[in-house]
Image (cartoon, rainbow, N blue to C red; front, side, top):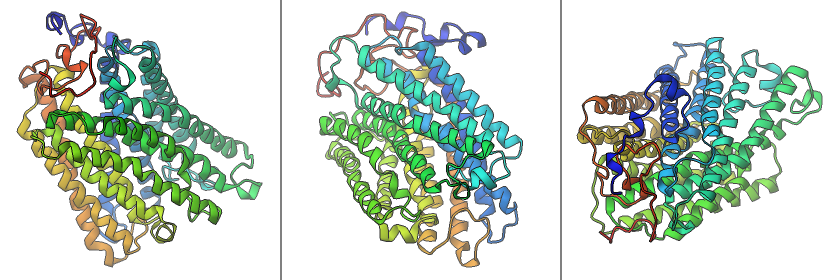
Length: 531
């Protein structure tokens, strides 16, 4: 937009620590989130490294069984609630959503800052739990073990997750109200970028599902501290009820992680192919379909938990049905790429890595949706590989793709493209070397959550641990060259990718109010055929 480049950018206004910690600017709050989740990512990653180091040999020679239980619990709790769930919505979503709809900020700037403080508060309880000895229940806190038998710090961990849940709820509320009330002139619903639609869909899920998690965690505390029989069968409770409550939230939580990733990939692919997304309206409806149907499939986590056989059949059918809108997205991305003039920059390599890994994760999910197969594969490393292909291979690749795509807009600096491509490729191969052997381990019957195992599983575990070393290198590389770019990187133009979208119509970095001249929208998104 004319004149935007002359204004002081948001990084030049309010540079003291106090101004950052009290800011109401959605862009700075997005960066505060990015700094925090990066810390928790490497904290959870350190736990993962110790897990893979332990599993490099059949004998449990690095840590005891109890310590191993605490290590994979900490890894799961941190990675799910303190990295994966907030990763794209709280960072890229906070920074970009107002820019993409032509708004000056989110609807409730103070609530936005409060959500970050709640996130930090929940994180402090979780770190305190680790420092005081950890928790050994697994990240799912299954009862009655978590309420009656575990002598670890269950309540501290539960309080940390409970607090961070309210951060998700406030973020979702803010995004929904922002999209409904603050779109600029001409920005009708079907002119919204797909990233905004993905933020809208995931906000609905966060608003509706997270309160169920909060209620469930409160019930854990009530039973553990008060001895009230809710889940413990010895007190008249029902442990399967806990699983219904927990998975009613935690399966939609998978879509809290993956829907934003799909939005990022849609933006990157269209910019890299320079054409409209194929089947825009179908992509929108598939986002909403995933958000809605995602609430009906939680029971596929419970095929061996004692639920009704008839319920299992229904949940199995619904689990196959939810694959349809996900498949629509993959087919539409493929059709967008078909015969396109593709530019293979780093964001595109990450996006294509997401598509490949997400397909493997999704297709193996169909294996687990079939009750007869799931009975044999549940609680094996096949399940571990499946959800890591979705949540790490998918969500993390997309997150890093988005960070690279919008890095020039966020910081005003360019990163070294060759290093970025190298890191993306190493990450793809390192990830597959880490987790594909785990499909084979699961098919051969190796159960998860054991720190020692028969010698016949050693080769595949050694391969997996070697892949984890490669993957750790791939995750450290972007941290290095992105930090380098802040000091030494070239100055970024306002639109380095010649992309379409309102965020590219303002300066890099944007001014505090996003636009000096209020933009108006006159056509649909991704109009690459127009100059």
